[in-house]
Image 1 (cartoon, rainbow, N blue to C red):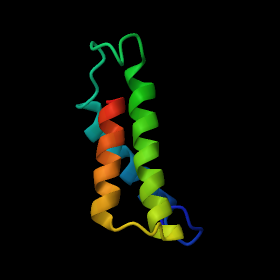
Image 2: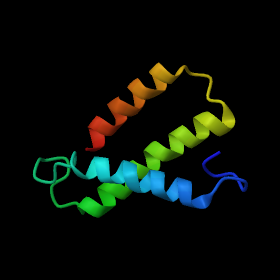
Image 3: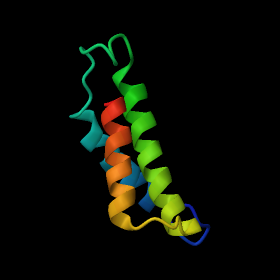
Length: 81
């Protein structure tokens, strides 16, 4: 999968880069929850969290359906971004 030895490491890094670029547009540094925080740290944290959950779902078989995972990820990311 994304982190397995057989997978091209460049796929994971390119996918993470793509996800982080999408989050960069969503970061609200001026509102209360992110005021004073580094945009780079927020985007890196969010991107790695997102990719990590997808990786776990694919690799370890999280027993939730894709729609449930997507909904929960959306809720969690809204709290951060």
